[in-house]
Length: 483
Ligand code: AMP
Ligand code: ZN
Image (cartoon, rainbow, N blue to C red; front, side):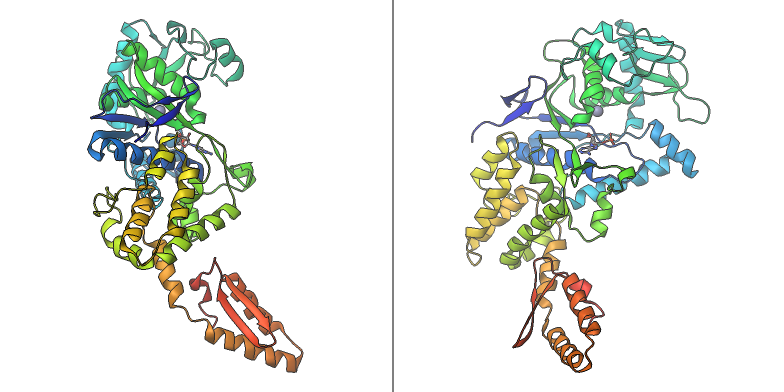
């Protein structure tokens, strides 16, 4: 096995990955703020870091990797949502947390080993803030506690900016109690209607950044291997996490050793936004019948450090690519589903399968080259002999390693397609067409033809009659009511 190499944002270079402790490789990824359904962009870091998690588990062993992803369940957006809807904060956050896990599960993402909720770590946050005050890195002012960025000489090193650049470029909240406009909030006061906890600075709640510092310290210690998230979090969130953590727990190599950031997702070339009308959630897509595996395949079709574009065309291509594999290995895939669906370990080991292709593992080891890994996966499946057990097992092993085959949606669709006989519809269309020729009115025949095309059926009309074929996007459920 060649080394794993990862692009580290901090050094701006691909580095060989050497864990602090190979018996416990530790990764922290910033999780969602829970007040609404995850949108498609939120799914990108989940899928990207799931691939990394799977690779690390493969290389170091499933019991030697600890992956932590938090839930931010105290935040002004959550408070605002509670005010708008009149619902309890706890209700909103627990419902949204469930939704998130369901939706990400549908994309084949394994659950991290720990999923701490911020509200469960308030005492640890208060202790860390008090420590920062005692060490002269933070100060209390008007019920707030602020981190003094000038007290940390490396502030800005991750994103390569100076404090002056940051002030010029960022939307910083100017407040009279701040010594420097870049100083950021560690603790803020809560009024009686807002969630709050007692602290040495009065009743209040934590700022967002301190959550990740306190939770990663509690669960992974002062130094750990990988920290991940979307590149929109690099500044200020990750810069602030580093400042807090390295000032509270100073020492050589403090906090995360490798920083990984995924680029943003766009939709049809545009930033996804509610005002442009191209905003959608993962649940919206699943409800429209897009299988989770197809979403995953699209996500992995672009390298994580490049901006990715969700397009209808990519969705269709991914659906086709996966369907071809499902059709070819239908029976082998059919057997596997009952066992691995929703299992924490949908790996080749559990199934007594051979390990995945070395070339696929190597592709991922090269800074998560998922594009190459997918290419190899498809190529291998294309060349494999569907009737040979060894080949079947290899295809399964490769797919499971990449996080596919863990849901039965596509497999059932393939079975459903097989069961459909289009001959009666072909006869019906032929009848309608011959009647239409007599009447000189093709409207009824054309309506049926359009409905067939809309169901993904290819309609071939020639002198010898009508022939119907299942096209690559054929969806039998859309035929209901046509016969
Ligand atoms: P948030 O709940 O906004 O803090 O976002 C949760 C995660 O989703 C963070 O890691 C963000 O970087 C990531 N994220 C948000 N929008 C996008 C997007 N359009 N593309 C990729 N990642 C995103
Ligand atoms: Zn974070």
